[in-house]
Amino acid sequence: MDLTDAQKAELSSAKARRESLAADPQRPTYHFAAPTGWLNDPNGLIQWDGQYHLFYQHNPHAAKWGPPYWGHAVSDDLVHWKDLPIALTPDMSPEDAGGCWSGCAVNDNGVPTFVYTGVETDRTGKQTTCLAFGDGELLNWQKYEQNPVARWPKDLNVIRNAYRDPYVWREDDTWYQVVVTAFDDRGQALLYRSQDLKTWDYLHPLIPQELRDALSDEGSIWECPNFFALGDKHVLIVSLAGECLQYPVAFIGEYRDYQFYPESMGRVDHGYHCFYAPLTMRDDQGRMLMWGWLQEQRSGEAQLSASWSGMISPPRVLSLENNTLKSEPIEELKSLRQEHFQVEKLEFGKGLKKLDLKGRALELTLSLNFKEANEAGIVLALAEDESEGLYILYNREQGSLSAEPRSPNREEGIWSSRPYTCPLELESNTLNLRIFLDGSVAEIYAQGQCLTCRLYPDKSSQRVALISDGTTYLEKLEAWTMKNIWSNSERL
Ligand code: FRU
Image (cartoon, rainbow, N blue to C red; front, side, top):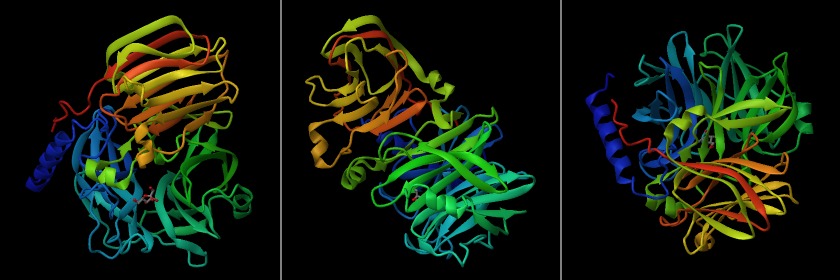
């Protein structure tokens, strides 16, 4: 790898900064977080020379949002990551002095190209589509001197400067771009066309406006669109931003004559404010992979004093079933499994049943048969005195799975104030869960749905327990401690 001295110094500083945070119990050990500082959306996902490149919205100066840089990491296996030098820096050029906001990466005939959002001045500045070109190693990036390459159409009444997060694909030798915006106080996606990525023609709203008007009014602003074919349908994922909304949804429907006709809409993840701004990429195995930003649920001061904020989920594999988007963890995560723990064929009654299992970096699978219980599940990160823990419960009467971090500290504005729920119909009265716990995040998979939540228990809260309100039968529980992806990560 051809690194300049300045880049080598940047990487050894990143390594030292990572190590300085390694003892923080809230810090993930197998989810990606920035070395230090702030991280939000995944950006520019691309496979290049067989490696996966992840770029991300990043403020390297403090653990709070600031004019975004594009951080960069690379992986051979989607599991172990290696930091690379920052790829984009907001600079004094008028197009992105307010930051290099989200966007994507494409391979333009051998030239790695970012299509990103330039923001002029600050958060309120004008937003446009800009380009940057990379070298063969994706290490050095040059902004296009004729930026910006696309702006909002003048005749649309776009509000709050919302025009951002370009998502680009190639169709019949032509480039297409959707950017999200808001006009008439509703989120919408606009479609553009180009032959060379440098000159774009605005076509029309991706969803015919009369159809958009008829859809629910969710999302006064849309962010971070993804538009792709899946099975015999098309999927549009957008993140809904607004007064109190902050979650992504997937519309599934038909794409014809360059317009999209949604037939159904559903949540991409059932966590609340915990999984946002996902970005997708089709890899060379044909999998449609989705990464998301795992937002913090603790106060701004707590984030600043921790010196880091935000994680990226390991990619999830997307599929469609009956017009519903399903996501599953990637197979590669199994390579992190270490010590194995197993219990099976265990009947237990009302209350907590502590297991001989502890950890804050675990993968668990379990299969519970409800017998007489109405509500049963598992508790993670449980304190020995039971004063706090993450309660993952299925309630048969309500037909929903919930995850609730319970802690005395919650009132201090550190934890989310809502339990997270996901409607779920059990097959043969049996709940099957697959859970990834890592420091302060839990991703809970059930029947192709995922519920992500953040929790910030004390370092010593490590116990795993079963819980129920009546007789329940544990068919099987397996658990593995998970390897730390950062030990031995210095492979430059
Ligand atoms: C989503 C988002 C994007 C924007 C970026 C700025 O989290 O608001 O719309 O490009 O973050 O950091």
